[in-house]
Length: 259
Image (tube, rainbow, N blue to C red; front, side):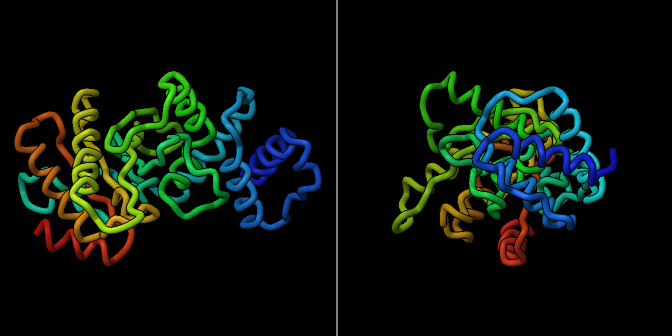
């Protein structure tokens, strides 16, 4: 099957799951099809899926990942020799590392808003429907929403990374408090501790809580850098901690803190 044939098969299967989608027509253009496929994957509830669907999906997402290119996290230069810390600007879903960190919501099942710009949505979209399924299984077993500042690990499925570590950062609905700062530091410590326990060598952090959760970027970066440095002073398991930034403003903040 060509990429177009795979994409149209996946769209057709997802439309066929729900009677209310019967009137949806598959666009002729590639971008329209990609947008529809991602939207259908985003809104799909965690429910069983056929082995054939997964085989086609994995082949499709694997080819898309290869087209985007992969960056090897272990080959990135340290900000300072011996620091074990890397600053990298780019798309975290293209990063080859033992784990990338997902800034999740408390339901921990991914973002259900079609084609939303958050990192949670992007990671689930490019990992595949398996990620929502395993997250749903974990959360059903837990029986309650994920507390702020904790961390859980899953496979990364169709991402270049081996694992995704999910953490729920603090949500600001008012002024920044000491409790918010404590919770954010806990996110970084929990992710690092979990990675070390799992024997991972590299972990890449997004800018937790600074997007939809409205944590001030400068303060968040200060907490992130301080917490990571404190952890690495005691830990020898982790060889690379990658601070992944997407925006120029975040890169400049981390450069001031790290260099």
